[in-house]
Length: 192
Image (tube, rainbow, N blue to C red):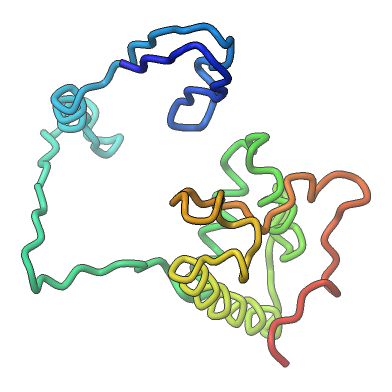
């Protein structure tokens, strides 16, 4: 239950994709029942079945393995691709997935790397070298930002000092792909 008193309380209840379900801000008291309990989530989580298309006639039962790490277990974190296969994966995604409005500025940045819907990506050896450096620098930057978000480093990254809330898009411009706002390669420098 979300029990809202009268007053200036504003916000929104979103779904997983951050689409608004209910706006909050009438100033009047109201109660909202948000469904989805831990028990229900656990049941739904293991009710999902995944299998290959050729197995559709006789689908195998999906085996869910619960992982409960113990002290000293080695757990691989941040194990994303760190070579040109990542760029190939990104290009594959761009080619086959519809672009949602929320993602357009990512696509605008990818366009500067030659990744654009309907176009073949054939980077030269030099471009691959630059893209590898970008992966290396990007990884270092993401680790530094993730573990050292301060308002001195990125002034818009934290809300209200020690609130604990972060803006994941603090350095992004949502209007990046609108006319007159294109990224130019000269704006970026990746090593020498």
